[in-house]
Length: 124
Image (cartoon, rainbow, N blue to C red; front, side):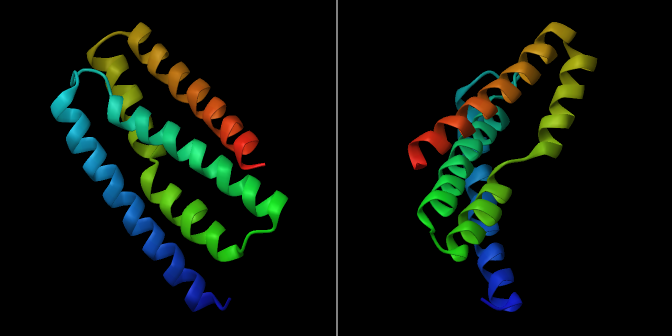
């Protein structure tokens, strides 16, 4: 795959992933407590799981680079958000409690790693 095609595949996946993140954020914000960043936690865990599956399929089953670029780099990159995770962690520390922030950080990292490991296992 040439560079221009790869960029197009990544850009398409990113657009779909970012749109999915926006829709998820709007839906969850309307349904859940606004004081805890549930939408960001959700998309980051789901993205970690999907990336685990994609990596396992590409590495263990020889799936195409296009799949890795479109879903792994593009969709998961657009869906997940480290910058929002960082901002919301700081917001929790400064506006609420350090305990709530620590729980959010621990849940994000712990569930994200667990989801990625589960994805790797299921994708194998």
